[in-house]
Length: 328
Picture 1 (cartoon, rainbow, N blue to C red):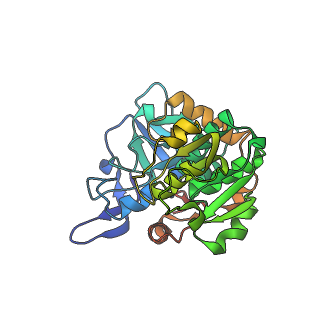
Picture 2 (picture 1 turned 60 degrees about the vertical axis):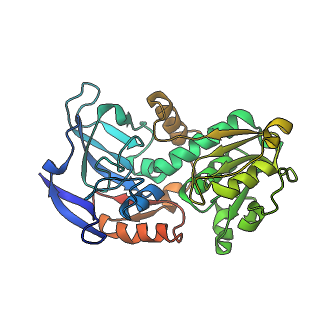
Picture 3 (picture 1 turned 90 degrees about the horizontal axis):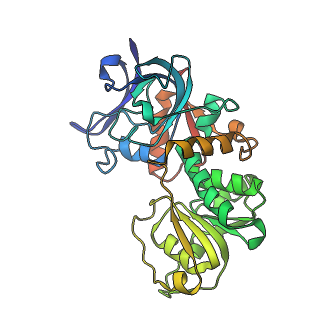
């Protein structure tokens, strides 16, 4: 069986190519999936640019998201024809990934696609939307909509846009932090009430505490922006942390935690337990479904993926982009 796959080479120089391969290239796992859709994430862009902290072995096929149909299974848990989703674990990192018309993965990595969710729609969310929903869950479980504004950093990214849209749907007042002034209208169209400049969320004073402003924060970038968020969160506020685009390191005194009772939640979408995964996908297909998202995403073919990954690395990508493997 031959099929198309995006391959990344580092020797003699970095090269990304869409090639026709055969199934012997796939790892020896239990379940063969025909991929209908994948989606673009920042990890994919890092992997496609040879980042050894994400993918150690090359040539490699990135793609940390898959939605498709089971074609063959050595596991009793799955049968041909099952509609499935795979996100997280090692998919697309050091295991052959979803920028391919077929993948073979361990049975335990797979969850059923909810009946009310189309495969394409699942990838409109993808890992970014799944991570956003995990973050929103922490906010919803601890903060009521009348408590005050929720700040979302990295607002134009995949996690940020989905988080804003879900929070807005659930009745929260959302402040969107971005360094892209031209994106204000877009952010307001998906539910942001306030647009906050990057400078406002990047304190340089070195103070341990600043004026309380946010009831909660969904931080997607890390670094000093996370530090500033901690300083400016209200009494008994909650902050989620899921990204390191700015920096994987941050500095904070203990005062926000012991004087204001601030809670910092780490968000892990990679090894999230299977039962919790399905629960989050059910939320995204029902109560947290975002009106209009499925039409608002940018859909590309496999041949167009390298250009989109380049935009992502350069910080010029906005919103969600899905990859149609059926028509590639």
